[in-house]
Image 1 (cartoon, rainbow, N blue to C red):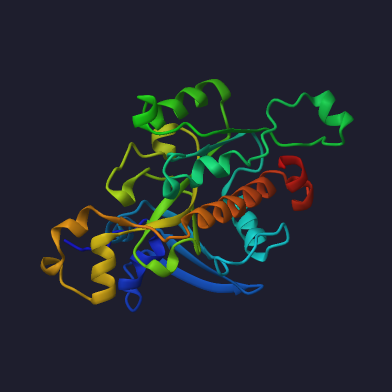
Image 2: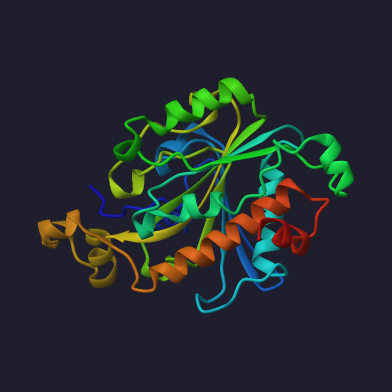
Length: 289
């Protein structure tokens, strides 16, 4: 069994870089100094090889962790453009921040959800009076985790879909990476949803169009590395040489608070911009501040 445990499809393709499985393509390019890798899985054979559903998996590289986040950030603009291309152009979007806000490495989703510009509740007359006509309806929720609520996240989302009837669901979650170098520096988005907690061996029910009945787009940033995977990667050790206790450990950087705050800022700005293209990022920043 491979020690490679990661939520990042771009890392899963690295072992096949010279001879990719049939039905898997990898495209890399740079825009305004920001790196992007697009992995497309278009066949059942490719899906089996990578253990992922057929679809698009887009990775965007962030600048150094000590860089500030501004509304004009090139990575944020690129992320907004890619996100808009994955979402339907019309209709209500339900944004769901997955994770436990009491555990810092898992707080990315709830923190980002709190910075989403929710508009579903704004009456048309009020929007007109304030110069905000043409807003797309958006609802946002951070449902917590099963241990806090006693309710599966998928059950909460399904009940909201029944009442709100959104055109799409956008889920935000913290991810697990293979490489320490990717923590806080990589954003992955996909049009195939997500299995919450899969990277930390606490997988919950998959959130996808198949399970929820509406298109599901996922977006996340890696905040942890599995201990055994890290040891194997750094020391090039064989699986039978990895201490058993390492298999129960997740590693996160000591500046995780700053990493989560910056990541949530990037994601919320990009999501708000993708959902409200008539507004500038400066306007959005003002409205959610």
